[in-house]
Length: 197
Image (cartoon, rainbow, N blue to C red; front, side):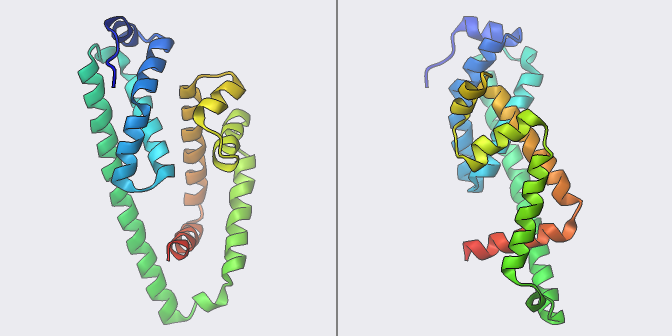
């Protein structure tokens, strides 16, 4: 990968948007694939990558060398990936406990999987429609229509970082809604586990 020019590094530390864009374009795919290889989840890897660049932007004035920026990005992404893996392991344990309880109590047969999936999808789509306008637009374009970040940025006439920020915002808002309904989390985990089997 070609190193960034001294001029770009200076402008980055000064908070110039075009310099941040240059850093983002230079590192984004490397960070994404680094995270994806660690956690094996493209959707979460996108979120972690976006969060990593947001953290970098918040303290941009602390960096004035290529190596410092690179080290911060990879260390931050690695730590976030490890946190994600720990959370995922806890979720798996919770799912195992739920399944054990359902087998003992005979709860699972009371629910048709298609009914559960329909309820989950209805809830998710209804929450998507409640997102702020631009956040909702980015979410639909990326996750439903499958457009790339650069395509969305061109379509909406905004920077790729703005698109990444909106994606992260959407995922966080949806996660908060899901956390308000604990049983929905278990159903989502159940469906995800079933699809992997």
